[in-house]
Amino acid sequence: MVSVQPFLSLHIQCPNAAVTNDLPMGNIARKLKTIRIGLYLFLAVSLAIVTTASAAEPAPADESCAVCHLAMGVEHLTKPAELYQADVHAAKGFGCVACHGGDGTKMGLDAKEREKGYIGKPTPLQTVELCGRCHSDASFMRRYNPSLRVDQVAEYYTSVHGKRLKEQKDPKVATCASCHTPHAIRPPNDSRSSVHPTRVANTCGSCHAKAEYMGPYKIPTDQLEKYQQSVHWKMISQKSDLTAPTCNDCHGNHGAAPPGVSSVANVCGQCHAVNTELFNKSAHSKIFAQMGISGCATCHSNHAIVETSDAMLGGGDKSACATCHPPGSSGSALAVGMLGSIDRLKAGYERALAVLKDAEHAGMEVSQPLFDLNEARTTLIKARATIHGFDQALLDKEIEPGLAVSEKAYARGVKAMNELQFRRKGLAVSAVIIFALIIGLILKIRQMERTPK
Image (cartoon, rainbow, N blue to C red; front, top):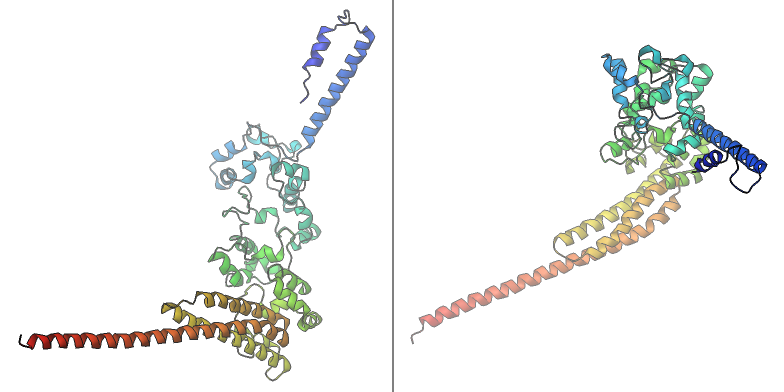
């Protein structure tokens, strides 16, 4: 920081009428003038930087908005002030004026100065622009949260919501305030936040699950109900796995939109990369695109995605393949063949595991074959992913190592059980011999006791 005191001292000690050093008076005057001009420019630039660096400034200490609102005793007036005390913006020092404008240092209605940009309840369009005033300013956001993206507004206007708001002025579409609870905004990693993974579905459902509200848009309103039956929701709600997808993981955050037919596989592929790669290389990928149907959702549904099972293969009642491939068709034959390969590996693995567990419970040392059998289990998991390539030869090649490991593990389990039987038989024979010896010894002792001395 540059101190101005030396310059001021020099000016005071060198009045125009007297010069106390050896420099000519004209030179000193010119230097003082230059210093003063430089100082004024420095202060002016510094003031400009301070006044333009941020889109909003922290609340002054004497801002009185909350004082009045809390004293009014009317819920819709007091609640915002109560909620805002825990808002992330309040934690950063921003007051009511930062968003609503006006003059927070004045009391009562005088605070609502339109000349100072006062806005009571922002319209949907004003809400987006107000939030974007700070959140689209990279230099401003760097001061408070550098990790936040600053393209949310631009992305929002690419969404279904943003397009309808901007082009049709539809007041019912979701804006920032629809998803981020006004006056009670918390970070997404806060479990109380409306955009925490455990709450996102209900946040979206606050509009999309209301049939009357969504009526004019002619779209389904059962997404929330179906999602809450899905394996994804069970992972979040029952297993606390916050990496499982919820609405925004598939539809996007600020650029929310339903995935197109051709992009569904890419959306699912964010998590299921192997399945997507295999599907994209398969004949089904091209056929589905030609038919205008989505890949993953055609077999697995979209919101009501249930846990998969081997029964989805083949030609049974639960088979996804049977919806397109009738019995006797080449597609049905392929599905039945793939199911047979999966069942063969599954049966081999379960047979080996059963005999090894029996041996282990009996006290036999089979830790190594049990460990080796994990490879067969891994192969089974990979094989279930490989079916998305719809290639029998590829699937059989995948399961061969698992079958070999299962057979080897089963043989070692059988050997352990045979050894156990051998030990048991040997123990039984030994027990009989020992018992016979004891009986013989007892009889001998009694005979000796009866013999006269």
